Length: 535
Image (cartoon, rainbow, N blue to C red; front, side, top):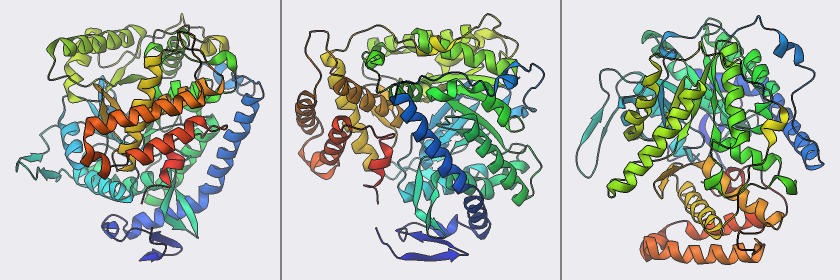
């Protein structure tokens, strides 16, 4: 990385390692000023909250279990409060599609037959500087309806249709830094960077279109972290001259601690929030991570940890009940399947699984759902159109009475040799793609992102750490997993061919993945050590 500051600098903000990217095109004086102000006002609080996460994890490691907060019982007991008004274009969210901020993908997603597209700077985007800046340029052009793309090989032109989906942007989580941007010599928060650049660049154009700056907030672990986002929103609105409540957010409940603070999160963001989402893949990862030191909390194969498991069903029921009680949308989880074009029978089976999953969400009372591919939209609509309504906010789920024990019940199941191998195969290949700049990777008929790769990594670490037994009696150990990583790497080499293998990052990914799953302590996120390998 070029350690010298870029010529683009003002009032303490400098760039490094960014010469090849057209940063000045998007980092306008207004954007830079908002970045400076938000960093100086809020970064110390952000770092303090991250330390609170670490302290809480140490208590979990010592034997404490997550529980509902006694200090905020009054908020949960008060039946009078509700969230603020939901904008018209967020009242029908039956089908939402998610994906990275690549130019062609943005066009295809906005043109997809869905209500909402979530442009993802987090789990679906590798935070290479060029990806981030070009992603913001792409969103700028999409908001202004000028975005176009021509396929170099075919010459095929892509542009927006007459009725593009409503746009929501997901910034990175509080834990991720943006090493290319320094304020007063300190690295900026990735979350504040993504949020501020999009907001300052687009709020006026969004207003002219009759929509607004909408965000999905990831990886929150407490209502205090939600309060930080709320204060960021208030400050940004004030600085940009926006009316209070202009910014609207949906929070992903994708960490175990957040499941115990859903109502408090809604309360902290009540002027700005419109819903909660069951971010189930990250939630499974967080469940493993937070309970990692407990030998009685080892999960079975990833494939068997489905939404029918008691702890996940309880999490869904609690989210729907909590949201509808307060007038918020309760969004369902991601269908990670992608169409299988060369095997009709396998594709029919995959689509049947998606339909069953979406029907489960409708029956539970969800107001909408996520898909990873436009080809799944008809299947999702088949399930949600049966509700005969743009949402299901009237379903109050008064039958729900979820306890802490319900949210912590370990599902039955076994660990298999195939499960160990699959986690290795997916983890290494995803990490290799991420290191090469791709954060959303189709593997084995599923769209894998950082969340699903984290499950692979966390399960392997947990199985090794606790000496878990396979269904055939063999023990999962560091030597066994290292040997399997070497075998799977050979298989990847044969599969992709020698040229692709030599040009890729598979070897680096395998070494890094092996290190993370066998080390005594657990890295909170694989993207933190992996980020050091990015330019």
